[in-house]
Image 1 (tube, rainbow, N blue to C red):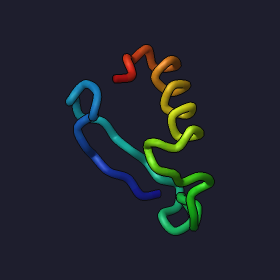
Image 2: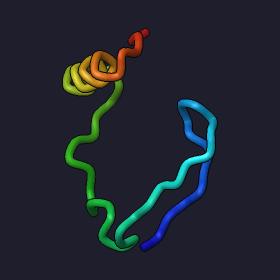
Image 3: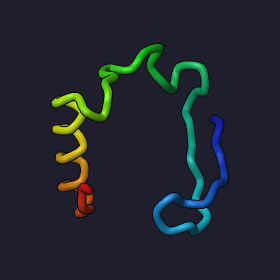
Image 4: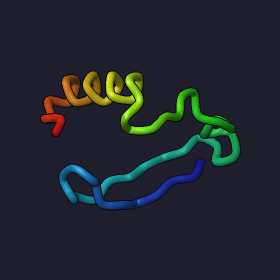
Length: 57
């Protein structure tokens, strides 16, 4: 098991990020990659902002 001890990007408190296996933990390519102006990217950002309760500016 691999991991990192880092400050949270939301709270700045220390947190542990664990990876079960470093080599296969991430896909070889992203499922979707698009410009911020792309309609699908905007839709994903709106959904994430809503789920997190964050404003989208």
